[in-house]
Image (cartoon, rainbow, N blue to C red; front, top):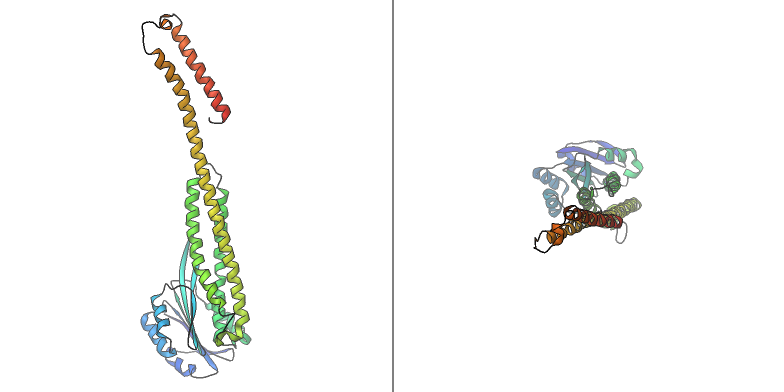
Length: 321
């Protein structure tokens, strides 16, 4: 589905054009065309490939989707894949944006995401002195917008982790806490899979052999890489905290089980003493004088009660009851 198709010259927008007119402007050395698609079909990608001369392997990746974040060179052009991690209630929705960048064109294909990049286009058009750098600056603006969307996700994950940590020492909440922590760990891993490869790929645009499309915007890409390093560090910190919290919860579960076992053992010891006395006096041998004694029964009950009471006192003092 076509969202926008606009032409720019010397940092200023010329006009919106139909797809059929793209080739006319791409051939002009002082212009570039910026096209935005959403959930593009194979037919639309094939049409864009014909208009821009896109590499078939890049088009195949964009068509299949679910690619690892990356930035690849195809001759004079670049192909970037970025994951769009968005909060949908308490769930994370993972979309994808594929960006084709050439000297005279930028094509962005957004998939499985509700949030578009109209704000990015407006930002670029408000900064003609930067947009004058051409398609390389547009790639930076799209990359920066994607990375900025990771920060609210980080904040939400940290807040959720804090809520779980507040319940760690609540009695009887260990099992539910572990379930929540594992669910949180799954979300953090999803974000990690989006950030870490992109950080590595974007780093290639700031050091070593710089692609000519990004040569004039190298400083801006370095800023994005710095943001990615910050996000990656926050993700690692959250993962470490989650692992620690899981270990604490497992330890609490073990402690609670030990407490239950101690209580059961204490009561078992008390009833074992009573059972032993009852077993001895229940043998009914002929020569057991206490059985013939008038006060034998209440005395036996008193001995049993006293022994059980003494054991209860000792177990209570030891913290087993």
